[in-house]
Length: 135
Ligand code: UDP
Ligand code: MG
Image 1 (cartoon, rainbow, N blue to C red):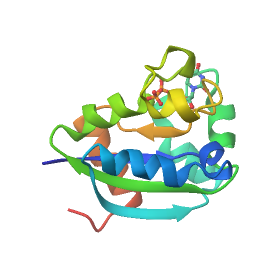
Image 2 (cartoon, rainbow, N blue to C red):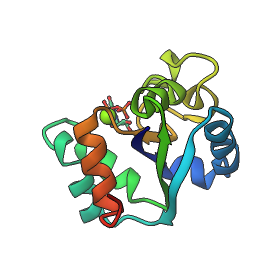
Image 3 (tube, helix red, strand yellow):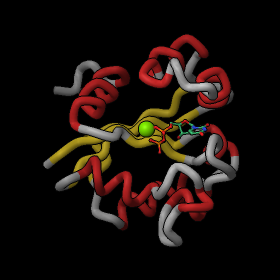
Image 4 (spheres, rainbow, N blue to C red):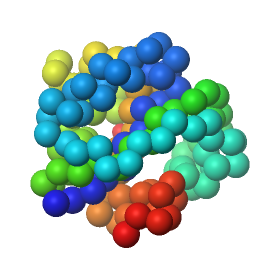
């Protein structure tokens, strides 16, 4: 079993899509190992997204992710990292496959409803960032 980090972003929490997104997660066979609603500070957002600090939209993305409450989850399943990214859909919702979370709930390429780790190393780092007690 593999673990990955998922986040329901402020746009989807504010629009009351969390319940539907969690239902999609469970329907797709993930176990929710941890789940915590929290409001990130701008500083925490900058730490979390540090790998993106050279990208032109870094300021925007860190302001957005710290703009309201998020729901942070550790998701477990066989091949969870890829399975969660498949369920999320493409970063740009215009390119996301129809059955995906982003196709249903994302507003645009920035306010795109969910986050998911992209590799085993980043999954381990991101899980430890929010849940340092989880081995
Ligand atoms: N993002 C953005 N503009 C872009 C590309 C990405 O605002 O042109 C934001 C968006 O919220 C995205 C996040 O930066 O989810 C991280 O980008 P990444 O390329 O890692 O996409 P993801 O892994 O979330 O699909
Ligand atoms: Mg990414």
